[in-house]
Length: 436
Image (cartoon, rainbow, N blue to C red; front, side, top):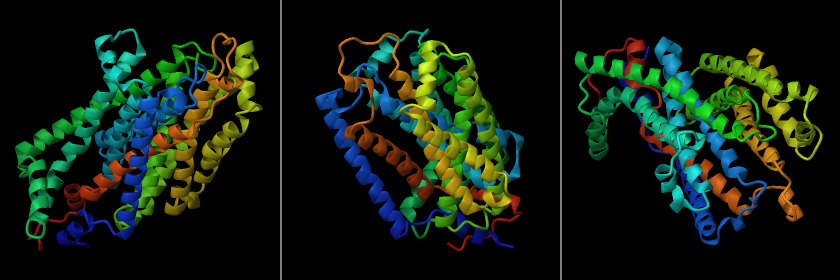
């Protein structure tokens, strides 16, 4: 049985190894290229993109919806697990909270990137209209960022105080930073009572707010009455899809963290088995809503709906549609039904496939519909009837994904990804003199 000092050595943040340094530098370089491309886009205007009067949203909004969906994992799953006090959640919740915070922050930044004139951002507040879903989106995203930060920060307080002591001799400057962030935590009954109550309130708040966020995003589409979006199924469709993307992202990150930090004795096969069952359930629910979204309307489609569905089933987007549906949704369900498919390495591969499929799924939701406007636009170039992102769009989009990964990387580097205090309590380890 491990003692307290061994647990501290295992879970305390450590320096990056060579691979970690290379990974971080690579992310920073990608982000710099993205910033350069964005500055060029602001200077030259949207003509450097392939977005036109037909595809007026394009890849940026696809990316935004993906980030919002991925943020769902820490909002709902963590909140529910915290409120139900499932002990198996302990090694996973903080990683989920980190993913949530990184994703929702980048969702807000991606919206600003999509604006051709970022200087007009202020107009969203000055000329806000309460009947507009966009106004509610502007309200709900900062709210979600704030609550996601608190849901990550409040449970960290005991661990930050522990790290203050742990690094006091070897890294006094880092120890001082942890001490400031710990807000003078000493672990008395009054502090614990306030912390427990605060976490419970935040967990209760984030559930409806996260559902509202997904619903508002869905309403941004469905209230346009466009073919392919004009469905009351959209909110449930978005929520179930977010469940899939979030759990898959959690699995992928948990595997990488487990391997790089050598946490196999804390994040075990049991946890991957649980996550595998959760992902299988999420995929099954999402498959059901996909059937509602595509299969049911195919029996009695209007003329416009028939054109849209043919584009997806047999037309120019059919290869991507069926690849995302079969490889990114149906195949994972089949593999996850078997226990061998729920082992760490297979789970990582499945998680990555589902995450990639989830990103392209958002592209499929948005682009084909935009290419079928209400009224055909007369006298426009043939190229406007088609859309594929320009190099500027790809560089900027990849940079936002790199930025999300950089946030996750830095938080994983400087925070204990597995709660130290709670793990010690669960293992019934008592604090002894810390050898550091």
